[in-house]
Length: 452
Image (cartoon, rainbow, N blue to C red):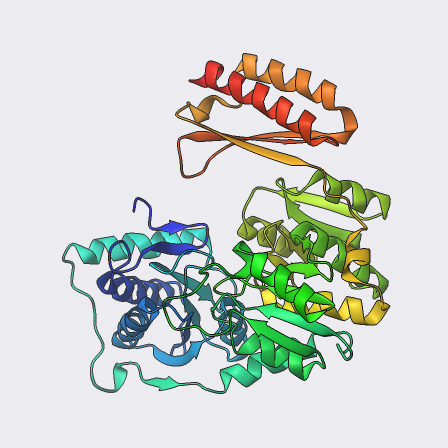
Protein backbone atom coordinates (compact mmCIF):
# COMPACT_ATOMS: atom_id res chain seq x y z
CA UNK A 1 0.00 0.00 0.00
CA UNK A 2 3.05 2.33 0.14
CA UNK A 3 2.71 4.89 2.92
CA UNK A 4 -0.17 3.63 5.00
CA UNK A 5 -1.71 6.97 6.03
CA UNK A 6 -3.25 9.02 3.25
CA UNK A 7 -5.10 12.31 3.58
CA UNK A 8 -7.98 10.51 5.32
CA UNK A 9 -6.52 7.70 7.40
CA UNK A 10 -5.52 4.21 6.24
CA UNK A 11 -7.65 2.79 3.46
CA UNK A 12 -7.61 -0.28 1.21
CA UNK A 13 -9.40 -3.48 0.23
CA UNK A 14 -10.52 -5.11 3.47
CA UNK A 15 -8.87 -8.44 4.24
CA UNK A 16 -6.36 -7.88 1.42
CA UNK A 17 -4.69 -4.50 1.94
CA UNK A 18 -6.32 -3.75 5.28
CA UNK A 19 -6.24 -6.91 7.39
CA UNK A 20 -7.30 -7.71 10.93
CA UNK A 21 -3.63 -8.00 11.87
CA UNK A 22 -2.95 -4.52 10.52
CA UNK A 23 -5.98 -3.03 12.30
CA UNK A 24 -4.88 -4.57 15.59
CA UNK A 25 -1.26 -3.51 15.13
CA UNK A 26 -2.10 0.08 14.18
CA UNK A 27 -4.39 0.39 17.20
CA UNK A 28 -1.71 -0.86 19.59
CA UNK A 29 0.81 1.48 17.93
CA UNK A 30 -1.57 4.44 18.26
CA UNK A 31 -2.02 3.72 21.97
CA UNK A 32 1.74 3.55 22.55
CA UNK A 33 2.47 6.69 20.52
CA UNK A 34 -0.17 8.73 22.31
CA UNK A 35 1.09 7.45 25.66
CA UNK A 36 4.62 8.51 24.73
CA UNK A 37 3.28 11.94 23.74
CA UNK A 38 1.78 12.38 27.23
CA UNK A 39 -1.86 12.17 26.13
CA UNK A 40 -2.72 9.55 28.77
CA UNK A 41 -0.70 11.07 31.60
CA UNK A 42 -2.42 11.10 35.00
CA UNK A 43 -5.50 9.09 34.07
CA UNK A 44 -6.72 5.80 32.65
CA UNK A 45 -6.95 6.20 28.84
CA UNK A 46 -10.26 5.88 27.02
CA UNK A 47 -11.20 5.54 23.33
CA UNK A 48 -14.42 5.78 21.30
CA UNK A 49 -14.72 3.27 18.43
CA UNK A 50 -17.39 3.39 15.71
CA UNK A 51 -17.90 2.03 12.21
CA UNK A 52 -20.06 2.17 9.10
CA UNK A 53 -22.22 -0.87 8.17
CA UNK A 54 -19.71 -2.64 5.86
CA UNK A 55 -19.49 -6.37 6.56
CA UNK A 56 -15.72 -6.06 6.95
CA UNK A 57 -16.24 -3.46 9.66
CA UNK A 58 -17.41 -6.21 11.98
CA UNK A 59 -14.07 -8.03 12.13
CA UNK A 60 -12.00 -4.86 11.79
CA UNK A 61 -13.84 -3.30 14.74
CA UNK A 62 -13.11 -6.41 16.79
CA UNK A 63 -9.41 -6.14 15.89
CA UNK A 64 -9.22 -2.44 16.77
CA UNK A 65 -11.00 -2.96 20.08
CA UNK A 66 -8.73 -5.88 20.93
CA UNK A 67 -5.63 -3.88 20.08
CA UNK A 68 -6.62 -0.89 22.18
CA UNK A 69 -7.73 -2.95 25.18
CA UNK A 70 -4.54 -5.03 25.03
CA UNK A 71 -2.59 -1.78 25.26
CA UNK A 72 -4.46 -0.72 28.40
CA UNK A 73 -7.07 1.56 26.81
CA UNK A 74 -10.71 1.38 27.92
CA UNK A 75 -13.01 1.25 24.89
CA UNK A 76 -16.53 2.59 24.34
CA UNK A 77 -18.08 0.85 21.33
CA UNK A 78 -20.67 3.20 19.80
CA UNK A 79 -21.56 0.86 16.92
CA UNK A 80 -22.71 2.05 13.50
CA UNK A 81 -22.60 5.86 13.48
CA UNK A 82 -21.32 8.51 11.05
CA UNK A 83 -17.68 9.61 11.12
CA UNK A 84 -18.62 13.06 12.49
CA UNK A 85 -20.58 11.37 15.28
CA UNK A 86 -17.46 9.50 16.40
CA UNK A 87 -15.50 12.77 16.24
CA UNK A 88 -18.18 14.56 18.28
CA UNK A 89 -18.44 11.83 20.91
CA UNK A 90 -14.66 11.66 21.25
CA UNK A 91 -14.74 15.31 22.30
CA UNK A 92 -18.01 15.25 24.25
CA UNK A 93 -17.00 12.23 26.34
CA UNK A 94 -13.51 13.52 27.03
CA UNK A 95 -11.93 10.50 25.32
CA UNK A 96 -8.24 10.45 24.50
CA UNK A 97 -8.72 8.82 21.12
CA UNK A 98 -11.43 8.15 18.56
CA UNK A 99 -11.35 5.45 15.88
CA UNK A 100 -13.70 5.24 12.88
CA UNK A 101 -13.81 2.24 10.57
CA UNK A 102 -15.03 3.38 7.16
CA UNK A 103 -13.98 3.86 3.56
CA UNK A 104 -16.42 6.75 3.13
CA UNK A 105 -17.76 6.87 -0.46
CA UNK A 106 -15.65 3.92 -1.68
CA UNK A 107 -17.24 0.66 -2.83
CA UNK A 108 -18.13 -2.01 -0.26
CA UNK A 109 -14.97 -4.18 -0.55
CA UNK A 110 -12.84 -1.28 0.75
CA UNK A 111 -12.55 -0.19 4.35
CA UNK A 112 -10.43 2.21 6.34
CA UNK A 113 -9.24 3.30 9.77
CA UNK A 114 -9.30 6.93 10.83
CA UNK A 115 -7.93 8.11 14.17
CA UNK A 116 -9.14 11.19 16.04
CA UNK A 117 -7.17 12.97 18.73
CA UNK A 118 -8.61 14.29 22.01
CA UNK A 119 -11.36 16.80 21.24
CA UNK A 120 -12.39 14.96 18.07
CA UNK A 121 -9.78 16.53 15.79
CA UNK A 122 -7.80 14.68 13.13
CA UNK A 123 -4.41 13.46 14.26
CA UNK A 124 -1.45 15.65 13.34
CA UNK A 125 0.67 14.37 10.44
CA UNK A 126 3.68 13.81 12.70
CA UNK A 127 1.63 11.55 15.01
CA UNK A 128 0.38 9.52 12.04
CA UNK A 129 3.99 9.16 10.84
CA UNK A 130 5.07 8.02 14.29
CA UNK A 131 2.19 5.49 14.54
CA UNK A 132 3.16 4.06 11.17
CA UNK A 133 6.83 3.82 12.16
CA UNK A 134 6.03 2.12 15.48
CA UNK A 135 3.62 -0.27 13.76
CA UNK A 136 6.29 -1.28 11.21
CA UNK A 137 8.89 -1.76 13.95
CA UNK A 138 6.69 -4.15 15.91
CA UNK A 139 5.24 -5.88 12.86
CA UNK A 140 8.73 -7.21 12.13
CA UNK A 141 9.14 -8.75 15.56
CA UNK A 142 9.92 -6.20 18.28
CA UNK A 143 7.87 -7.19 21.37
CA UNK A 144 5.23 -4.88 22.83
CA UNK A 145 5.24 -3.79 26.45
CA UNK A 146 1.87 -5.24 27.47
CA UNK A 147 -0.13 -4.54 30.65
CA UNK A 148 -1.56 -7.42 32.65
CA UNK A 149 -4.17 -7.89 35.36
CA UNK A 150 -6.17 -4.74 36.09
CA UNK A 151 -3.98 -2.84 33.63
CA UNK A 152 -5.73 -4.20 30.55
CA UNK A 153 -8.45 -2.11 28.95
CA UNK A 154 -12.14 -2.74 29.57
CA UNK A 155 -14.67 -2.79 26.73
CA UNK A 156 -18.34 -1.82 26.84
CA UNK A 157 -21.09 -0.82 24.46
CA UNK A 158 -22.10 2.85 24.57
CA UNK A 159 -25.62 2.90 23.12
CA UNK A 160 -26.28 6.41 24.42
CA UNK A 161 -24.09 7.80 21.63
CA UNK A 162 -26.96 7.76 19.13
CA UNK A 163 -29.24 10.06 21.12
CA UNK A 164 -26.34 12.25 22.24
CA UNK A 165 -25.31 12.87 18.65
CA UNK A 166 -28.87 13.56 17.45
CA UNK A 167 -29.34 16.04 20.31
CA UNK A 168 -26.10 17.75 19.32
CA UNK A 169 -27.33 18.11 15.72
CA UNK A 170 -30.63 19.63 16.82
CA UNK A 171 -28.85 22.05 19.16
CA UNK A 172 -26.96 23.44 16.16
CA UNK A 173 -30.14 24.33 14.23
CA UNK A 174 -31.12 28.02 14.12
CA UNK A 175 -34.79 27.14 13.45
CA UNK A 176 -37.09 24.18 12.94
CA UNK A 177 -38.00 22.50 9.63
CA UNK A 178 -41.78 22.36 10.11
CA UNK A 179 -43.69 22.22 6.82
CA UNK A 180 -40.85 20.83 4.72
CA UNK A 181 -41.02 17.49 2.90
CA UNK A 182 -37.51 16.14 2.45
CA UNK A 183 -36.15 13.01 0.75
CA UNK A 184 -33.04 11.56 2.38
CA UNK A 185 -30.69 9.20 0.54
CA UNK A 186 -28.58 7.51 3.20
CA UNK A 187 -26.34 5.49 0.80
CA UNK A 188 -27.17 2.37 2.88
CA UNK A 189 -24.51 3.80 5.14
CA UNK A 190 -23.67 5.00 8.61
CA UNK A 191 -26.41 7.66 8.79
CA UNK A 192 -29.30 5.32 7.91
CA UNK A 193 -30.80 5.71 11.41
CA UNK A 194 -29.32 9.02 12.60
CA UNK A 195 -30.25 11.27 9.71
CA UNK A 196 -33.98 10.39 9.42
CA UNK A 197 -34.27 10.67 13.20
CA UNK A 198 -32.68 14.11 13.30
CA UNK A 199 -34.71 15.52 10.40
CA UNK A 200 -37.95 14.09 11.84
CA UNK A 201 -37.29 15.49 15.31
CA UNK A 202 -36.56 18.86 13.67
CA UNK A 203 -40.09 18.89 12.22
CA UNK A 204 -39.60 17.74 8.62
CA UNK A 205 -41.80 15.16 6.88
CA UNK A 206 -39.21 12.62 5.78
CA UNK A 207 -39.06 10.12 2.93
CA UNK A 208 -36.03 7.82 3.03
CA UNK A 209 -34.26 5.86 0.31
CA UNK A 210 -31.01 3.93 0.62
CA UNK A 211 -31.68 3.43 4.33
CA UNK A 212 -31.56 -0.37 4.59
CA UNK A 213 -27.90 -1.29 5.04
CA UNK A 214 -27.14 -5.01 4.95
CA UNK A 215 -23.36 -4.82 5.10
CA UNK A 216 -22.98 -5.34 1.35
CA UNK A 217 -24.96 -2.54 -0.32
CA UNK A 218 -23.23 0.60 0.99
CA UNK A 219 -22.86 3.27 -1.75
CA UNK A 220 -24.24 0.80 -4.30
CA UNK A 221 -26.01 2.97 -6.88
CA UNK A 222 -27.12 5.44 -4.23
CA UNK A 223 -25.89 8.27 -2.03
CA UNK A 224 -23.91 11.37 -2.88
CA UNK A 225 -21.98 9.66 -5.70
CA UNK A 226 -25.16 8.44 -7.47
CA UNK A 227 -27.87 11.11 -7.40
CA UNK A 228 -30.30 9.76 -10.02
CA UNK A 229 -32.49 7.87 -7.52
CA UNK A 230 -32.71 10.92 -5.28
CA UNK A 231 -33.62 13.19 -8.19
CA UNK A 232 -36.45 10.86 -9.19
CA UNK A 233 -37.71 10.45 -5.62
CA UNK A 234 -37.82 14.20 -4.96
CA UNK A 235 -39.94 14.78 -8.06
CA UNK A 236 -42.14 11.71 -7.40
CA UNK A 237 -42.94 12.75 -3.83
CA UNK A 238 -43.27 16.47 -4.58
CA UNK A 239 -40.59 17.16 -1.99
CA UNK A 240 -39.11 20.55 -1.24
CA UNK A 241 -35.58 19.18 -1.50
CA UNK A 242 -33.46 16.05 -1.26
CA UNK A 243 -30.32 15.36 0.75
CA UNK A 244 -27.71 12.72 -0.15
CA UNK A 245 -24.95 11.40 2.10
CA UNK A 246 -22.01 9.12 1.43
CA UNK A 247 -21.21 5.92 3.30
CA UNK A 248 -19.84 7.55 6.46
CA UNK A 249 -22.03 10.67 6.18
CA UNK A 250 -19.30 13.28 6.27
CA UNK A 251 -20.57 14.59 2.91
CA UNK A 252 -23.80 16.20 1.80
CA UNK A 253 -25.05 16.99 -1.67
CA UNK A 254 -28.57 18.21 -2.34
CA UNK A 255 -31.30 18.21 -4.99
CA UNK A 256 -33.83 21.01 -5.41
CA UNK A 257 -37.57 20.48 -5.93
CA UNK A 258 -37.10 20.12 -9.70
CA UNK A 259 -34.49 17.37 -9.32
CA UNK A 260 -31.53 19.64 -10.11
CA UNK A 261 -28.30 18.97 -8.23
CA UNK A 262 -27.03 21.50 -5.69
CA UNK A 263 -23.31 20.83 -5.14
CA UNK A 264 -20.95 21.66 -2.30
CA UNK A 265 -20.01 25.06 -3.70
CA UNK A 266 -23.65 26.11 -3.88
CA UNK A 267 -24.36 24.75 -0.41
CA UNK A 268 -21.41 26.76 0.95
CA UNK A 269 -22.71 29.90 -0.75
CA UNK A 270 -26.20 29.47 0.71
CA UNK A 271 -24.87 28.78 4.22
CA UNK A 272 -22.39 31.65 4.04
CA UNK A 273 -25.15 34.18 3.45
CA UNK A 274 -27.28 32.66 6.21
CA UNK A 275 -24.38 32.75 8.67
CA UNK A 276 -23.54 36.35 7.78
CA UNK A 277 -27.14 37.35 8.53
CA UNK A 278 -26.77 35.78 11.98
CA UNK A 279 -23.32 37.40 12.46
CA UNK A 280 -21.60 34.02 12.88
CA UNK A 281 -19.53 34.00 9.66
CA UNK A 282 -16.22 35.00 11.18
CA UNK A 283 -14.34 37.65 9.18
CA UNK A 284 -17.02 37.29 6.46
CA UNK A 285 -14.77 34.56 5.03
CA UNK A 286 -15.31 31.10 3.54
CA UNK A 287 -12.50 28.56 3.08
CA UNK A 288 -12.55 26.25 0.04
CA UNK A 289 -10.10 24.41 -2.20
CA UNK A 290 -8.59 25.47 -5.51
CA UNK A 291 -11.04 23.10 -7.24
CA UNK A 292 -14.05 25.24 -6.30
CA UNK A 293 -15.97 26.53 -9.28
CA UNK A 294 -15.06 30.04 -10.42
CA UNK A 295 -18.75 30.87 -10.20
CA UNK A 296 -18.49 30.35 -6.43
CA UNK A 297 -15.67 32.86 -6.13
CA UNK A 298 -17.50 35.41 -8.29
CA UNK A 299 -20.70 34.98 -6.25
CA UNK A 300 -18.89 35.58 -2.95
CA UNK A 301 -17.18 38.67 -4.36
CA UNK A 302 -20.50 40.02 -5.54
CA UNK A 303 -21.98 39.47 -2.07
CA UNK A 304 -19.06 41.17 -0.35
CA UNK A 305 -17.63 37.97 1.15
CA UNK A 306 -14.02 36.79 1.08
CA UNK A 307 -12.74 33.43 -0.16
CA UNK A 308 -9.57 31.73 1.08
CA UNK A 309 -8.44 28.79 -1.07
CA UNK A 310 -6.33 25.79 -0.04
CA UNK A 311 -4.89 22.65 -1.61
CA UNK A 312 -7.38 19.89 -2.46
CA UNK A 313 -8.50 17.91 0.59
CA UNK A 314 -10.82 18.70 3.48
CA UNK A 315 -7.94 18.36 5.97
CA UNK A 316 -6.27 21.40 4.37
CA UNK A 317 -9.52 23.35 4.56
CA UNK A 318 -9.82 22.43 8.24
CA UNK A 319 -6.20 23.37 8.99
CA UNK A 320 -6.73 26.84 7.51
CA UNK A 321 -9.99 27.30 9.41
CA UNK A 322 -8.45 26.30 12.74
CA UNK A 323 -5.35 28.41 12.15
CA UNK A 324 -7.27 31.60 11.30
CA UNK A 325 -10.45 31.02 13.31
CA UNK A 326 -12.81 30.85 10.30
CA UNK A 327 -16.20 29.21 10.85
CA UNK A 328 -17.24 27.86 7.43
CA UNK A 329 -15.35 25.89 4.81
CA UNK A 330 -15.61 22.91 2.53
CA UNK A 331 -15.29 21.29 -0.86
CA UNK A 332 -17.32 21.02 -4.03
CA UNK A 333 -17.75 17.31 -3.27
CA UNK A 334 -19.96 18.14 -0.28
CA UNK A 335 -17.51 18.09 2.63
CA UNK A 336 -18.77 21.12 4.57
CA UNK A 337 -17.26 22.09 7.92
CA UNK A 338 -19.22 24.32 10.31
CA UNK A 339 -16.48 24.73 12.88
CA UNK A 340 -18.72 26.19 15.59
CA UNK A 341 -20.54 22.85 15.71
CA UNK A 342 -18.20 20.17 14.31
CA UNK A 343 -14.52 19.29 14.08
CA UNK A 344 -14.89 17.60 10.69
CA UNK A 345 -17.23 17.55 7.71
CA UNK A 346 -20.72 16.52 8.84
CA UNK A 347 -23.21 15.61 6.11
CA UNK A 348 -26.25 15.37 8.37
CA UNK A 349 -25.52 18.71 10.02
CA UNK A 350 -24.96 20.32 6.61
CA UNK A 351 -28.27 18.99 5.31
CA UNK A 352 -30.09 20.21 8.40
CA UNK A 353 -28.58 23.70 8.14
CA UNK A 354 -29.45 23.88 4.43
CA UNK A 355 -33.05 22.80 5.07
CA UNK A 356 -33.26 25.28 7.94
CA UNK A 357 -32.38 28.09 5.53
CA UNK A 358 -35.18 26.98 3.18
CA UNK A 359 -37.64 26.89 6.09
CA UNK A 360 -36.48 30.22 7.49
CA UNK A 361 -36.69 32.18 4.23
CA UNK A 362 -39.69 30.46 2.64
CA UNK A 363 -37.68 30.40 -0.59
CA UNK A 364 -37.06 27.28 -2.65
CA UNK A 365 -33.62 25.69 -2.59
CA UNK A 366 -33.44 26.36 -6.34
CA UNK A 367 -33.89 30.08 -5.69
CA UNK A 368 -31.38 30.14 -2.83
CA UNK A 369 -28.77 28.23 -4.86
CA UNK A 370 -29.11 30.67 -7.75
CA UNK A 371 -26.90 33.07 -5.78
CA UNK A 372 -24.10 31.47 -7.79
CA UNK A 373 -23.90 30.30 -11.37
CA UNK A 374 -21.80 27.21 -11.92
CA UNK A 375 -19.48 27.91 -14.82
CA UNK A 376 -18.86 24.96 -17.17
CA UNK A 377 -15.87 22.99 -15.89
CA UNK A 378 -13.85 20.49 -17.93
CA UNK A 379 -11.32 18.13 -16.35
CA UNK A 380 -8.85 16.14 -18.46
CA UNK A 381 -6.42 13.62 -16.93
CA UNK A 382 -3.14 13.32 -18.86
CA UNK A 383 -1.42 10.04 -17.92
CA UNK A 384 2.17 8.79 -18.25
CA UNK A 385 3.91 12.16 -18.01
CA UNK A 386 6.57 13.60 -15.69
CA UNK A 387 4.25 15.37 -13.26
CA UNK A 388 7.22 16.78 -11.32
CA UNK A 389 7.94 19.25 -14.17
CA UNK A 390 4.53 20.92 -14.24
CA UNK A 391 5.83 24.05 -12.53
CA UNK A 392 9.15 24.23 -14.40
CA UNK A 393 8.20 23.67 -18.06
CA UNK A 394 8.57 26.90 -20.07
CA UNK A 395 6.47 25.52 -22.94
CA UNK A 396 3.63 24.67 -20.58
CA UNK A 397 3.82 28.05 -18.85
CA UNK A 398 3.60 29.83 -22.22
CA UNK A 399 0.58 27.75 -23.28
CA UNK A 400 -1.21 28.44 -20.00
CA UNK A 401 -0.53 32.19 -20.27
CA UNK A 402 -1.94 32.27 -23.80
CA UNK A 403 -5.05 30.33 -22.72
CA UNK A 404 -5.59 32.64 -19.73
CA UNK A 405 -5.51 35.66 -22.04
CA UNK A 406 -8.13 34.00 -24.21
CA UNK A 407 -10.44 33.24 -21.27
CA UNK A 408 -10.03 36.62 -19.56
CA UNK A 409 -11.80 37.21 -16.24
CA UNK A 410 -14.63 34.76 -16.98
CA UNK A 411 -12.44 31.66 -17.05
CA UNK A 412 -9.85 29.82 -15.04
CA UNK A 413 -7.12 27.22 -15.58
CA UNK A 414 -5.67 24.83 -13.04
CA UNK A 415 -2.90 22.31 -13.74
CA UNK A 416 -2.41 19.90 -10.85
CA UNK A 417 -0.12 16.86 -10.55
CA UNK A 418 -2.02 13.90 -9.12
CA UNK A 419 -1.04 12.99 -5.58
CA UNK A 420 -1.39 9.24 -6.19
CA UNK A 421 -0.96 8.55 -9.94
CA UNK A 422 1.57 9.43 -12.68
CA UNK A 423 -0.70 11.96 -14.34
CA UNK A 424 -1.47 15.66 -14.55
CA UNK A 425 -5.00 17.00 -14.19
CA UNK A 426 -5.96 19.84 -16.52
CA UNK A 427 -9.01 21.79 -15.33
CA UNK A 428 -10.54 24.60 -17.37
CA UNK A 429 -13.56 26.75 -16.57
CA UNK A 430 -15.18 29.12 -19.02
CA UNK A 431 -18.48 30.84 -19.60
CA UNK A 432 -19.05 28.53 -22.57
CA UNK A 433 -18.67 24.74 -22.39
CA UNK A 434 -17.34 24.45 -25.94
CA UNK A 435 -14.61 26.98 -25.19
CA UNK A 436 -13.72 25.13 -21.98
CA UNK A 437 -13.41 21.84 -23.87
CA UNK A 438 -11.33 23.43 -26.63
CA UNK A 439 -8.88 25.07 -24.22
CA UNK A 440 -8.62 21.93 -22.06
CA UNK A 441 -7.90 19.78 -25.11
CA UNK A 442 -5.15 22.11 -26.34
CA UNK A 443 -3.51 22.29 -22.92
CA UNK A 444 -3.68 18.49 -22.54
CA UNK A 445 -1.79 18.17 -25.84
CA UNK A 446 0.88 20.56 -24.58
CA UNK A 447 1.20 18.62 -21.32
CA UNK A 448 1.75 15.42 -23.32
CA UNK A 449 4.38 16.95 -25.59
CA UNK A 450 6.16 18.99 -22.92
CA UNK A 451 6.17 16.45 -20.10
CA UNK A 452 5.89 13.12 -21.91
